[in-house]
Length: 293
Length: 340
Ligand code: SF4
Ligand code: SF4
Image (cartoon, rainbow over all chains, first blue to last red; front, side, top):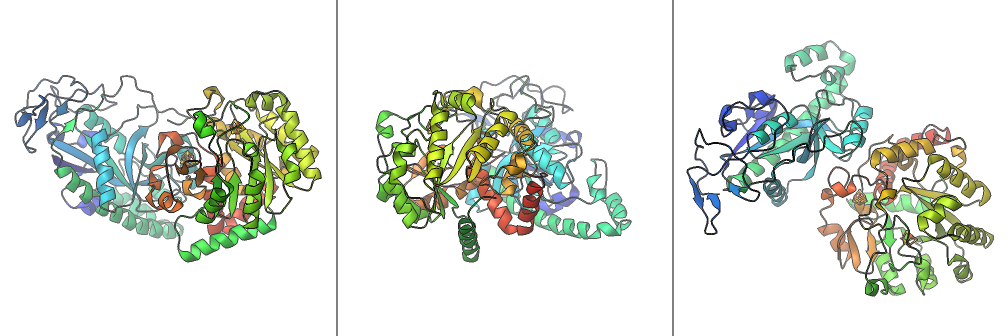
């Protein structure tokens, strides 16, 4: 299957290897990736409805036991196939696997900058948790292990404004039990999930749980650009040591991504089909304000 | 915080040696379960639900000593089951003390008075009595009337005979902070025990009563309330100040499951004292072949509500060693009533 890397920032995309697609928002995911979504063609903006996966199209074959399987990985899907729920366990043709890859804040206090977090669940406050396709997740774990790449499989939290101080990170850790936090994974995963595109999230720790971000970075929002941050940094010399530390952490973090992503990409290249995953339960339990999932 | 100086020095020396050797994973406390048989059936226990043939299997004294030598941890906590049901528990303890292991003999104390004449007081031996509350709560949690009085009598007799005595309290959903405070003050001031240990109950799926367990946010809330009670400065815990801060949600920690390896009647239990995912025959295999990164808060759903000392005290000890100043800060905070 074709593997596409979605990277929220250009710096991450460059580190990963050039062909990563930069998507800071779910709305930026190219239609070619979400192309199999039936009917509308537009990715949903919000939490996914119960998944509708499509029946196999041309290029798929039938296995001896009667189940459909993909034999050729690069066939484009038929544009007008009508979406319908697929029974659990039925192999479904997905033209694309998406790896959402980037850097993120560390919440698990045992992780250093550059440590890789493979998302076993993606959380956002008040939203139903998202889980990657189990077969994909298992394949990723095996590939990273076989490649001797250190990682933890844990939860990833998406927040509009990630915690910036050690105390805020501690509270987020105690509340959510997420090893890392970022601003994009949930929205991207939700859009992909709705389109029936299998996805996986990999984050590399940038700032550790014990560190406090300099003020301008802490104010970062999805709309900020790096030049704004640089200008703000220049105006606050007392924060320069913190920026220097962050720059070193960023190097380690990007190095982590450079190690992990190619291993996953290589492993997924040999996947021909994925069994249909269990559909998200309608009304799945929301991640609570206080409390751990 | 109540741990004998000799033990503190021995453990610090051991940790430094591990650091110098460059060992990434090493045990601090061997959790030794020489049997699963118990004379109680507590509401929150996940250890005793085994078939009769397993309950009838006991480790021999030699197997216990071999386990202590094989893993090399400076501290051995003898748990179970009820260790005092083991017919050779005095031999096991004597052999471990002879090997200069700091032994915590955990007991519900029902048989304690019967065994005391056969045990010898030592700086290496601490009798650790299970105490989950004052009379009414304790007897309800262990599901047998009269157990609290027996435990109190056992503690008094052990102190009279010159033993070091500590208690081990598990905090459950029914443990109101005020009740815990009353218990800790009673243990310190009336029974004059040497120190206490406290841990939130782990939600064992096999435990007979699932309603007794707290979820993590409730645990943090309960411990904050307990350590805000008047009189808490007089309580002495056999824990690092950092662990007590962790219980109150003031410190983020990840579990160090390999810090407290478990040897039971099947072998070395994977991955920790609380979860049983199988056993391996040697300690080396346990350390080298377990995928440790798979376990811990956030990584495994079964760890979500675990804040037990068998997972996190080793993390706290390592953090204290890595930054002694932090340890001192937390200790001073505790003494001033700001931390633990
Ligand atoms: S908690 Fe201890 S005393 Fe209670 S049943 Fe279990 S082993 Fe026995
Ligand atoms: S957090 Fe650690 S000690 Fe607790 S159940 Fe998980 S692995 Fe075991």
